[in-house]
Length: 266
Image (tube, rainbow, N blue to C red):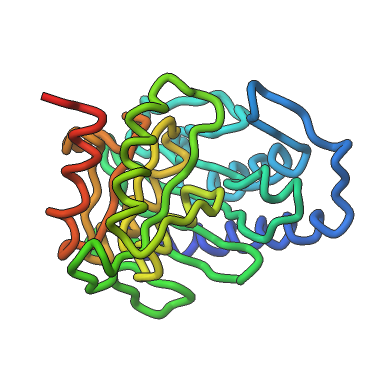
């Protein structure tokens, strides 16, 4: 398979679906929102966008499997090729008319992510990467930042919003990074957070209680842009392990120890 060609074809599908989301944003009403579970919102926009993504991506690789957030198709990761889709990462932002939300699409070959796309719709910024091909924003090559000290870094995170079982170690990390960094930001879209690490806007990022569709595409962006990614215990289980650390290489040795210590104390 030609990863570059597949990624380019998938980018076309994603852009078309992004235009649909942006059009719906003009007339969207809060009455159109449903509650899947505690603080997990869904709307017809999420569901319809996912259906359109599935249809378009199915034409690129016949008989590929899918892992999707809204279950518009039966999830099946037991195929050689599997698309991992979040049709609207940042639904809460979208519902409240906050302009940070995205489409996230990744392609997995067996257990390896080989292509990733994050489309930040409001700024019309299409981030994409493919295995051994680098990372890009609107066809311009991107790289992680060169920041080498924590005190000069800007860090992204995501607040726990439904699973509060690990609030204590999370607050320990916040306490540490508030005092040791230039600042922390919470945008409300894990996919955008990772894309911004990949292009150097953020120097590092960490979050817990995540799903594969939140991070699969963005994690490849960071890796192909020269950064590092893992779970909180420094294992390579960031896609399915519900937790992720990402940063540039220069900051890595300073960034991960406080997180590992808080969540996996020896």
